[in-house]
Length: 148
Image 1 (cartoon, rainbow, N blue to C red):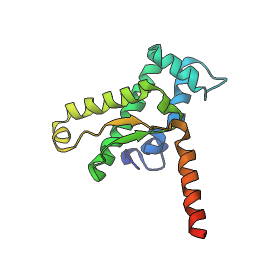
Image 2 (cartoon, rainbow, N blue to C red):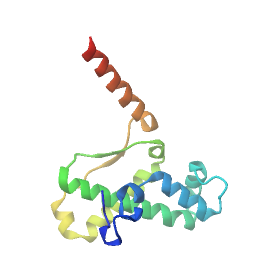
Image 3 (cartoon, rainbow, N blue to C red):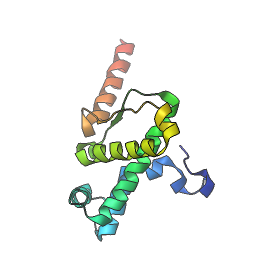
Image 4 (tube, rainbow, N blue to C red):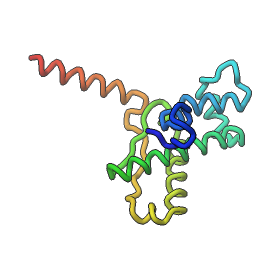
C-alpha cells in the first residue's frame, strides 16, 4: 500500500510495508541505542522500549502510529470486526497498547473519521509467532484432502 506517493513511489518510505515493518523498527531502535553489532536484537529493543528509553520510545511510537494509520486505511474499505497482530512482536503487550493508543488519538483528533468509522479492537494473535505455522499446516491439510 502506498501511503505517501508525494515523496515518489521509488522511495521505500512511501510504502506501508516499509513504515509498518517490525524488523525495520527493531533495527532503528537498536541503531539509536548504539547497538550496531546486533541491529536485529528484538529483546534489546523492547527492553529499551519497556524501560521508556526516549530514543527507543520515539521510534516505537512513530511505528505504532504508522500501524494505526494502516488500520484506519484498511478499516475504511473493509470495515473489519477486529485487527489481529501476529508474529513474534505480538508477544509484547506494550505493542498492542500503543497501537490502540495511537489509533484512538487519530480518531479523537479527526472528528470526521472518528464519527464515520467503527473503531475496531486491536488484539494479539492467539498463536502469536506460531500463527503462520498453523496456517501453513491447515493449507497443506486442505490440499491433501482435495487429492484423496
